[in-house]
Image (tube, rainbow, N blue to C red; front, top):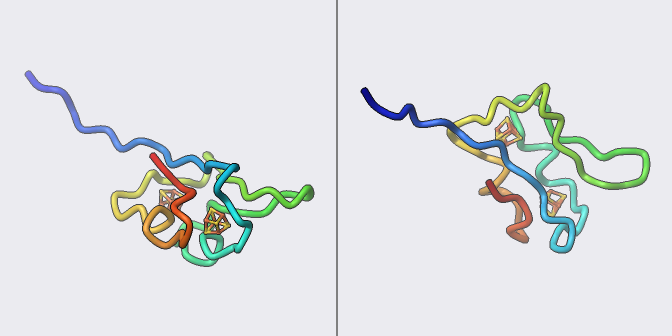
Amino acid sequence: MGIAKKNKAPYINYTVCKKCTTCIDTCIFKAIYMDIDGYIKIDYNKCRKCSIKICIYTCPYGAIRE
Ligand code: SF4
Ligand code: SF4
C-alpha cells in the first residue's frame, strides 16, 4: 500500500506574469498559448503535467507555479 506520487498541473500567477511569451516557446507539448485578450493560458487538455516542468523553470519572473 502506498500513495502514488501525482504530478500537479502548473498555473499562472497573473499578478506576476509579464506576458513575455517565453513559456509558450518552451513547453514541448505546446500547451501554453496567448488568448485573444492577451492573457497567457495553459491548455489543460494538452498539458502533460510533465515531470521536467520546463515552463516553471523558464519563466523569468517566476509566474508559473504548481
Ligand atoms: S514566461 Fe512567465 S512572464 Fe512570460 S508569459 Fe510565460 S508566465 Fe508570463
Ligand atoms: S507542465 Fe509540461 S506540459 Fe504542462 S505546460 Fe508545463 S512544460 Fe508544458
